[in-house]
Image 1 (tube, rainbow, N blue to C red):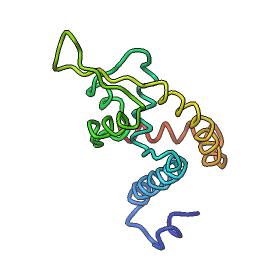
Image 2: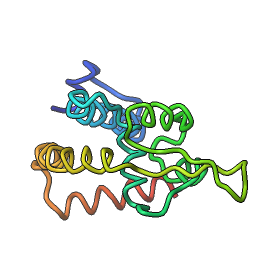
Image 3: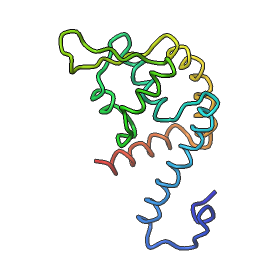
Length: 150
């Protein structure tokens, strides 16, 4: 559906304003689609992102700063996210023996198993969302979005 119809707004100041609103609207739309899948597993998209980051570094643990630097939503409270995931048994937090100020965070087998369950569900979700665009269109969109942030 066109942005004008979604927002019930016939005109925009210019194409740049429309593009910015379209990016924000679409990002929120994508977030809802992802949240719908994760809700069944009592996970937020930010928690899912932390688990994926830890799986990518597995078996090497990461510290909180490493996780924050790799997060898609860098405004998230990583300390709170890590603690909630620890309480669910999806990761561990271990104080480093050599440096008491350093905390090492690692994904557990339970966390890896959950991601194994989520992977096909998220893949189907992504395929459903992107089926209307070609690989070339996706590449063009990636180029434009990268250019916008550069």
